[in-house]
Image (cartoon, rainbow, N blue to C red; front, side, top):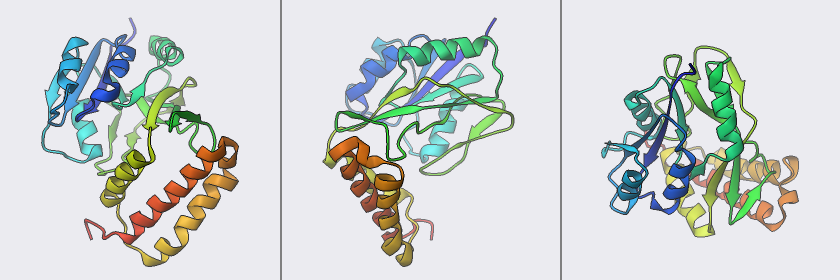
Length: 239
């Protein structure tokens, strides 16, 4: 018998995509929601889909919050899914096939990001692969507040089918989220605040062929350059 699978999802006022997200996760043996104090329809949607709901109202930072969800899962094999990500049919079948005979301790999963309603395949934003499927006995999240990652004791393999990520629908949404992320990951450095935004734009738009995504490619490179500036001009919260 293949190992059972828990899909874990962090939520906080996440009603926008949650119906589609939970429908895509319904093949798992368990879907666990770790909620951070939602006041919208998030929990009603989760209950309607039969998800198990746990609460962690005190925000621990992304790394510790995700590890908390992994620790609460019933099964050792977990897939960590964000509340704006959808497991597409090809990826679902690949996950099920992989679990028949796992060859790795963890699996990198590609992500197809949608910006302003368009799938983005250049600029360094695809395949955007990160570890999402892993055996929790062999891997755990770093405690980083943002840009957390999974550290694994064992071989790393890759899945090939992507999940769909609703990254940003509007410029305002992008600016609001990246403003918060740049505060969490602030690393005050005036020299880098001057130089790194230019490098970010050049790397994404030219070296990573962001121009092939048209106007959206240009806009994304400019916005990420602005995020880089914010990150290095803000005061380090731990400094």
